[in-house]
Amino acid sequence: MKSTMLGLATAILTAVGSAHAEDSSPGNAEAGAVVFRRCMACHKVGPDAKSGVGPVLNGVVGRGAGAYPDYNYSTANKNSGLTWDEPTLTTYLRAPRKLVPGTKMTFAGLSKDQEVADVIAYLKQFNAQGQKVGP
Image (cartoon, rainbow, N blue to C red; front, side):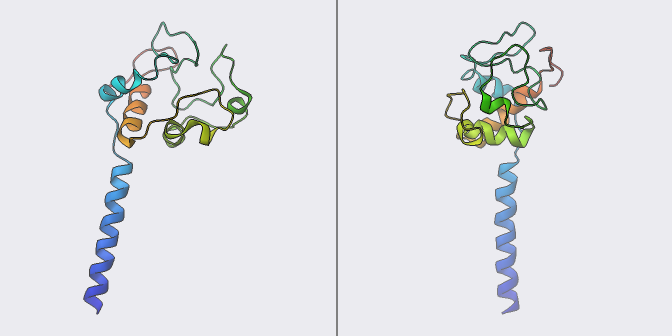
């Protein structure tokens, strides 16, 4: 009986560990550049980026929500109190309107965990001035 319980516990821990490892897979910035093309209708990055339908995303990782200068954010976004750290961006990029009801962002979200991780890795490369600072 003990060996059966030990085997069951090992199987459960292995499954949980594998699922957690999939959730925390590192992003690939090159792949993120490809995924980011879907975002470019509204968002820009880089030294010459200008706000359009959406705000510039230079330096977004670590920035407070609704804080990019000279962009007219929704009240919901400005008052969300969020900081765009990796876990928050991960949740937001999966379902923007679920995390920030009332946001102006009409994008439904990215359904693949790897694409979310890749886009975040891509965005992390850009500092607030739009200079690439990472790989």
